[in-house]
Image (cartoon, rainbow over all chains, first blue to last red; front, side):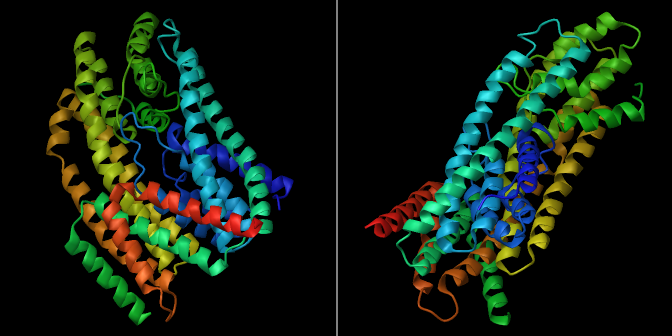
Length: 222
Length: 245
């Protein structure tokens, strides 16, 4: 159930890139679950399953805002773990539910590791620790911090995939609910989270209802 | 006003992508800010290594901003350094703009543009679009604003220097945020209906469950994440419990 060694290495590199994109370099939002999980699924041969779990994780992240001094979960590397492992495990609702819950927990591990790295950065790169930094030294220290972030992302992915694989195997053996019930639970969760975006966008009922009418029309015509 | 060479301006813009690379709890993005404007400082103080060192250490102190608005600050500070403005004035200017650069960016990007782009990607997937269409649509829409803000910010920073505060106040950033939120509302309504259809399936009787999920989501708002997480955790626990028994 684990990826091939070559693919595993690519996933580690993807994890490093995704961690960098989250804050350190770029912030082009490749690190959003809808992208990161899809790319991971694509690397292991099933971008559609990667996108499926990416969708579920994305709606969980709609209301996570990196504002002020808030402690927030880190979505990117955990989404790579979820995308790759779910795409390998196969498309059962119980696997989707298990992978989603694992990823949501792993995101907090990612968030904690990011906070730890930021403490380490105080010693590595802050001018208060190195008041006489030359231009070249400042550049080197800044780049070292970014390399550590890349390494952190790779470690999160490298450690997360075997763990989630183990949990998925365990779930497959012991799962006792009908898959249809599990599917309904996940689909209802996605629906509730999407509807909660109503408040995030300011709660304009007229626009929300116009959008909903378009959705109904699309379903009827489709 | 002197003009920085195009190569230096391009390097500052590129380095601004890495401004949060050494984020820390002591100086926040201070080191990253110094890293970003270093090409300008090297150019301005090319004949005076001591002045370069002094100004670099000064700019590596505490600083914060929304990352996409860093080119505004970098451009403006580069302009002030080039015009040989006294260092206490430059420091006061940096302190004055950092709050507004943060809040403008948070409101426009984190609260409006990013969720709107994400809901667009989700809506496309729910509507049955290919995975790559959803991903490319999300990244394109999101990064159009992202890259545009960086380029615009660099230009106004270099052109207007100390007056960037006024430019930011007059720019239609708030209106853009409002428009993005409105479009997000439309997309959220559209995607929610498609999600309800996934719950009910073709012709079965689960429409009530879907409607209940919508009502719960709207009622809970930003608290929905925690409640839904707990509910799914309970389902998982029951699934494992029933299987074990």
